[in-house]
Amino acid sequence: MLTKEQLDDHWEKIYLNHISIDCVVFGFHEGQLKVLMLKSNNEEAWYLPGGFVLKEEPIEEAANRILKERTGIDEVFLRQFHVFGDPDRSKFHNEIYKDNSFFNQRFISIGYYALVDFVDVTPMPDAFSELCTWRDLDDLPAFQLDHEHIFRTALDTLRLQLNYQPIGYSLMPQQFTMPELQKLYETILDKKLDRRNFQRRILGFGILNKLEETRKGGAHKAPYLYSFNLENYRAALKEGLQGGW
Image 1 (cartoon, rainbow, N blue to C red):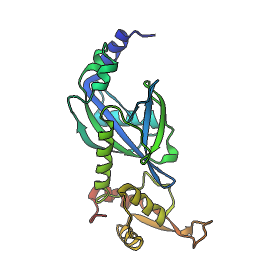
Image 2 (tube, rainbow, N blue to C red):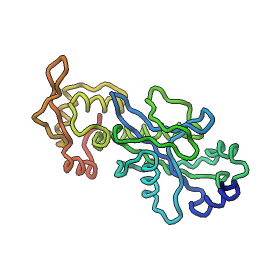
Image 3 (tube, rainbow, N blue to C red):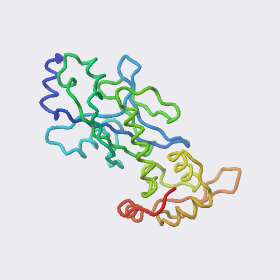
Image 4 (cartoon, rainbow, N blue to C red):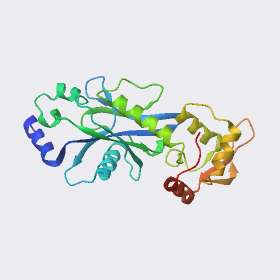
């Protein structure tokens, strides 16, 4: 087993100093928007998935690697949204790792948010955690460090970007109903949307295919199923959409 000095030397050799990555991973399940969180070993401290950048590794590859380690999936919808550089943001680490120079340094963190299909994710703890799990947005624990600020900034960014880019392909199953898609938008935006206006606008974007199947088993008239038109969806991601919600 490595001593603290040997472990510190190991981290220094393979990772860039002063740079870290924090990821806000959103999933949608049973009408609830969820965020992936980790619980620290032997204490009631919760934090977001994150890690460091290998010395010869591009930043984007580092973010994808970290997400795959925590979720088990790759090809994730991933967006860089902010850089966090408050001088005091790593004070928590300073209290825990007083004799560990790697963790004692000031870290500037690059924030990414990811949108994933809930059922595809296998949450996996890291070396510093005993649990990796989904938490509902209305039942979040206390965050350590500045991770609540990172989370809130990611959520605000997602809500803003919802006004000019499509959302849903990475969060919804392959087939879904219009009410299910509307529920996703309402959950992210935290407000109710008019049913007719939502359907008119979302269909007007040309990113959906209406299927000849319906959702069976409900008490009311069975709603039609839809899927995303991937070609148009990707074009909308690149070119943007007009109008806000």
